[in-house]
Image (cartoon, rainbow, N blue to C red; front, side, top):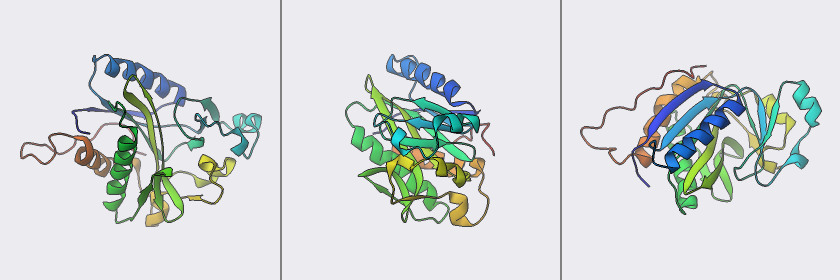
Length: 227
């Protein structure tokens, strides 16, 4: 699954605004007006519900969450309830997938595993629970939707996320699993900008058709998301 693609860093953006960008980009990619595009973004606190719903996995009422500043959205991706917020690097690969959905999910997991390996952290993907794990703790949530053969939504990597915010939900509906961050695993503060280089390099290893050629330049560092 290799093709040329663009990278856009949206910086910190509300979920609604980023969702609108996703939908517009998806339409442009599906119609051939724009190349496949990886969108990178950091969101204010937001809880999203996938196709499985997940409201039964809220640990606070929706009114209480809104009063605390959380937004809530029902969206098209697969999966259950998920939290996004500051300190989390969210990626929306608007990539042509066709019917190779499982292959695409495994490729995303491979990208995450390579990224964490650059920091000396051993992780793994689990086909039964889409995402990437360190022991019994989730480091990356993954949930995608496919329309007109093109993927959208994607992954949420916990870099220095406030883990207390996950106490508002049962993440992905998994009662016997925990959540962690890269900063927690390394016992130091890791910025989103610090993760960008290894992440983009891992994406090139997995998706870029020119990767490994002598003329391939290092991945460009998008401007923005540096917290």
